[in-house]
Image (cartoon, rainbow, N blue to C red; front, side, top):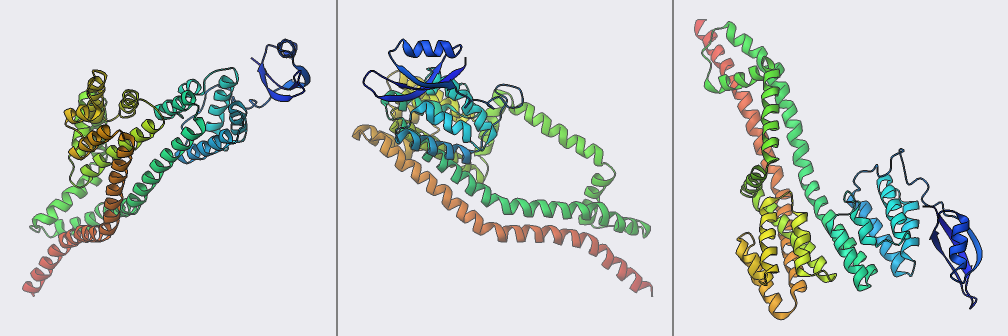
Amino acid sequence: MPRYSYTVQDSSGNVTTGVVGADDEDAAVQSLQSKGFFILSIAEDDKDKGIIIGGKKGDYGKVPGSDMVFFGEQLSTLVAGGIPLVRALGLLSEHAENKNLQICLGMVYKEVSAGGALHKALEKHPKVFDEIWCSLVQAGEVSGQLATVLRQITEYVRGQEELKGKIISALAYPSVMALGATGVLIYFMVFIVPTFAKIFDDFHMELPTITKVVMMFSNLLTQYALITVLVIAGIVWGLKAYIATPSGLLNWNRFMFSLPLFGPLMKNMKLEQLLTTMSTLLRSGVSILNSVAVLENMFKSNLVFKNALTAAKADIAGGRSISESFKKTGIFPGLITQMMWMGEESGKLPDIIVVLSAFYKQQINQFIARFTAMIDPILLVGMGGIVGVLVMSIFIPIFKMSSMDGGSM
């Protein structure tokens, strides 16, 4: 349905502007006049032009977290400044730099301008606005604190993006070093080792075990490269197919949490995400039961936490306290359940969860700092060990050849 921007004057002389949806301009004029307005100007609103990009409505992808932070800040500022929500959405959809966000906001703008609730409009775009966005916006609309809730969403997304950035930065250097070392290792095994293998074969030497092992891997990479690639691809495909099943995903999640060094980190990251999200939801006015329901959907890719939250939600719905429900699952540490109990007793549960969230965020930051400090010597020792094995596998036979030649002279 087309929309028309208008400027009207009421019987008291007050001038207002807005947008009305109508089949044509005459219908829009009649709708406004029936309300007693004197029309100063009216024109078809073209702010949604360009909303359909690529010729297909809704053809858009995900939006980076940094763009969502910027959008949240802008929308909260506009709404807090007294700008009508429809007008704010129109401005942001028109000037959004990210094309995916621009398309999505254009559709949200159309639905809200037609009288729909903002959280209902957001629910139709799960690629961009997840359960957290929708639940918090709904709480903000119900409580009349939309601007405040939008700021809380922005802070939440910004915190998650900062944590993600720290982890990526910590893993970037070792990943590049590992990739470079793997490339050098493959070059050595494919081009250098076969040359020496031919020389050793000509001398009919009895090779040491370390050299035989290195040459075996070299043969796999040279003579059986296609078979090796197919076997690896088959293993990866089979693993992915297994993880796609509920039991496979659950076992995979348990395996990842049981890994030495990184297992506790991954669990702490999930706990921090859960606590931060819960505190944001509760402070925004979302009920405990609905908050747990949002968390349950958010952790659908991790069945260890999802199953625990499903069981906890059922207990809470049955009248059990959140601390008892979480403790019963056996997944959440005693620190969390005890602190939650104290929060429930004191009536300060959201504040207690904020403290817990900050604690786990600090634990993660400390791990990242220690990992960054330790990774350099670990990489040097590891790469040095690999290079040492390769050099020994080549030079031990060479030294043996030299001793054989010296003895025959």
